[in-house]
Structures are given as C-alpha cells and as structure tokens.
Amino acid sequence: GAGVSQSPSNKVTEKGKDVELRCDPISGHTALYWYRQRLGQGLEFLIYFQGNSAPDKSGLPSDRFSAERTGESVSTLTIQRTQQEDSAVYLCASSLVGGGGELFFGEGSRLTVL
Amino acid sequence: GQQLNQSPQSMFIQEGEDVSMNCTSSSIFNTWLWYKQDPGEGPVLLIALYKAGELTSNGRLTAQFGITRKDSFLNISASIPSDVGIYFCAGSATTSGTYKYIFGTGTRLKVLA
Image (cartoon, rainbow over the protein chains, first blue to last red):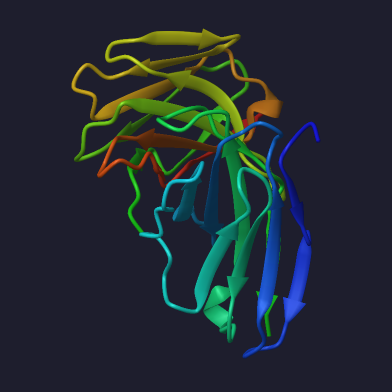
C-alpha cells in the first residue's frame, strides 16, 4: 500500500483478555517500529525490527508484551492479560533503511481496556 | 520510557507570529526528526536532519541540528490556524547496533486567529 496500515483502528477489550494489533509497513521498508502513546502524552518506544537482525526489545514494558515480524513485511504486537494501564494508542512506523532513516507512521490502533 | 526534553510544553500565539521550540538530550544523536500530530492521527514527518549544524527548511518551517548534537530547534514563521497541533522531535543514535528513535514530550501549539 501507499502508507503504513494498522488494524484494528479501535479495539475495546475486557481486562485480562489478550489482544493482537497488526501493522503492514510500506512496501520495501526494512525497518519497523512500535510505539505507545497514552492520552495526552508523547511516544514511548516499544520495539524495533531491522531486516533479519535480532529486534531491539528494550522498550517493552513487561513480559505481557511481545511482537513478531515476518521477514520485512507484516508485524503483530500482542498484549497478553491486558490491564487498564495498557489503554493507549499503539503506533507503528516503518523506514526504508535502518540506521536513522525517516520514519513514516500509520494512523494507530486505539486500545481501550475496560 | 526514555524521552527527550522538549520546550515549551504548550504555547498560544496570534496568527502571523513566529514560533520557536526546541528539544534537548543528554545523549548525542546522529539524526533528528520533527513531526506534527493532529488529533486522532499518526505523526506526520516535517523535517529530517542528518548533520551537526545543518539548517533545513520546508516551506514556513525551518529546523536546525545543534552543533553539540544534543539539541535541535524548530521555527515556524508567519503562523496560520492550520499550524495548530502537537509537534514532536525525535532523535536517533547508534547504541549497541540499534537505531531506535526516542521522542520528545511534545509542544502543543494553539494559534489564535
């Protein structure tokens, strides 16, 4: 597609349930990032994928959070046993190259945990 | 999570005025990016900076990569109502072979017609 695509755009779930968020990066982009943005806050780094290299998971807040990426395409962010503090917009971005290239963001997935 | 210091946190200005905001870090960065985010949307890239001292313009926007590589500045000239939104800086540096971007805390801009 022309831009980064994220789904679902909105997700409401009950506390304790698992959720999966999907990101389709721009075709040909080798780097993919996930960020979390709480209401009225800035962007918190979660995880970074670069080609076939081991991902940088240093921003994942707990072991309930995990992410996978298939080659240089789709990525899935999974949150297990969701908590109310997980409520946020989860933003995905991709970059043509690693090494400090320009990031292009999707519209985000808004997660609400009741 | 780790974030950059961005100031001012918010500002109200009159239409036609110039705006300045800056971002500072305790670490050296190799790349600075500036974004604008409208409500309910993802951030949109405004300007990218790759060299210390670099000054780059995009229409009424001008950004600079600080000489110390620990700061960056964004200026908006002759503001208009559609400039309203949240502006974020982001910095990237090679750390253990990764190029993660750290984002600033944001500057909320409101333009009074």
